[in-house]
Length: 392
Image 1 (cartoon, rainbow, N blue to C red):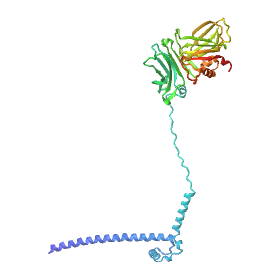
Image 2 (image 1 turned 90 degrees about the vertical axis):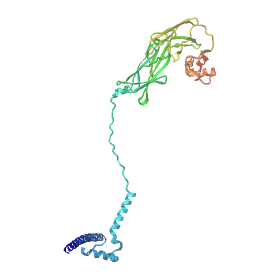
Image 3 (image 1 turned 180 degrees about the vertical axis):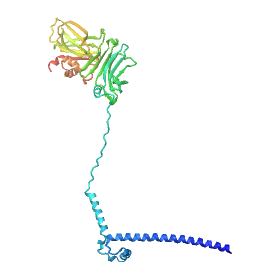
Image 4 (image 1 turned 90 degrees about the horizontal axis):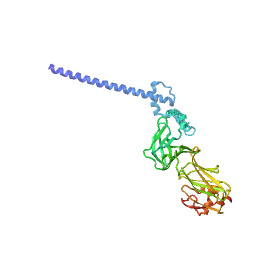
């Protein structure tokens, strides 16, 4: 019996302990709810202050709220009791109107920090001025027919060698801006025009070099530096042979003008003298032909004259000479003469030589029924109305 009673007592203790925990939890929950109600009362009382002054004490706050809710007609002034929300709404509307119609946003100023620029370190300003375009130093014709080209361009850059309009090689300059082009194959006899193109910005040389490779060897070959101011001889023929300067025809017109045609080394100059009196000069074409006319006045029939044609290098030195002595024959009285067109001729030069003025080329074209004055052919025989030059 005593053992069973002891068990029952323990069970009762456990039950009472559980009831205590439940009661404690309920009490805590009631306290929390009371705190919430008190907080709500204080918050509502605070809001009621903005609507209407409340002279009553805090203890009667809850009763005042309930009374106001049950009897809203006790509030005074209708909309006046909501003055604060109305004021806020008016302020918001005014701000919106100002932003929409009066506010002008100012432009934003973005400050960009300066970017540091680097100057080229390979060449200075003075050096760059001298290599603004590729230039030639040497163009030499070797005994085996090869052409050596040396020049200058920007340091540590590339430059292309152009021969007759086609790029044949691209060389790289050293730190001093120097380059050398040495072809593997030799150049065949003929005419060549050499220019340079700098790879950076595709800069072309202002100067060209004309090279004539003679079939007789490098001793008779010529290289000329061609500029806007004229030509400079880079390599002159070291030995001339028969055929390097030839006079093929001498025409004396009844207008007192003499015309000389012949062949010589291309791009060089030929001069004409009569009895050691200088008459003028002309340049040899790329096809080795030249024509030169000069006024000599009335030559006396039966009298002996000495006609001298000289070939000059780029510096003006005479490197070849052909002297022709003749006796002036009787004039036939024919008004016209005839000229055989050679490769490289044009009507302008022919008119300048025979009619004194190149602009008279149209007279020759009309005389020979040439529709296109810019189109004449080698070996074409032209009738030249020499007397027409005196009446124009």
